[in-house]
Length: 286
Image 1 (cartoon, helix red, strand yellow):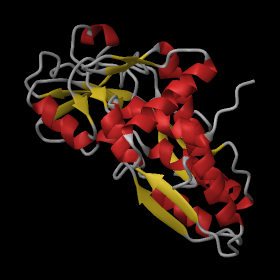
Image 2: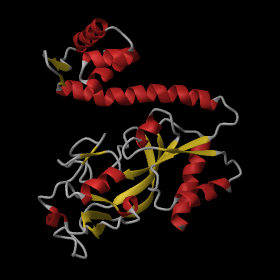
Image 3: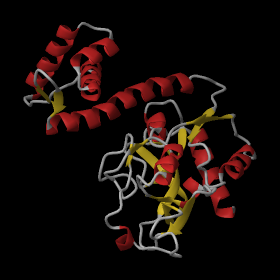
Image 4: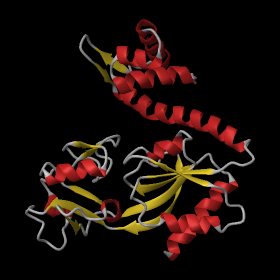
């Protein structure tokens, strides 16, 4: 069995994300030759080529892609373990919940109220994440729980419970050829340009794997749709209220979207379980 050190994984992930040894070395605050030798030693120990190097560019091999994916999760797990140990030793530990602003399906206030009524309730800090990074907040320990959309968000390493299931809608400019329709099917949208969500692998889901402009948040998406550069298929609650320049039409055969409350598979603290139970209970009565 080949044992990898955390520092080796950190070095490789930096190079794989930057695709440039100079920038990665600057990010890690080490000398570029030392970084290059460290990656070469890692390749030698694993017996596989991780990077393709040329005078102009660096690219990942399939083995490199695999190590980047799992290496990120490994680094997140180490960071989360350290934070969990510190929090477990704090007698007045409180919870951190990460959400995307405006994308709680109007459930958040009810969830917080239900949790506050529990005798063991702690303070809940609300953190705001972006369109695709909230799961990472939980994996690396910055947050204890997250409100996520499945299957859009990557739930690797997380446990979750479903709070709300909803339809998906096509978001179109008002002058679009399909804007006058009451409802749509996926076949109606063939040939349309869908966005690429920053941080979401292509092909992950119909909301993520497009070939259009790269989008980081709903504000950017709205602008690109109004310019006619793309359309999108998203959970209804994630794009409400409707922008006056756009229309939303249900896509009747698109897989449904689920809002879930998610937490680390390694986190078995009673205060986390209490919050999850309160969230599920509140979502059923809302």
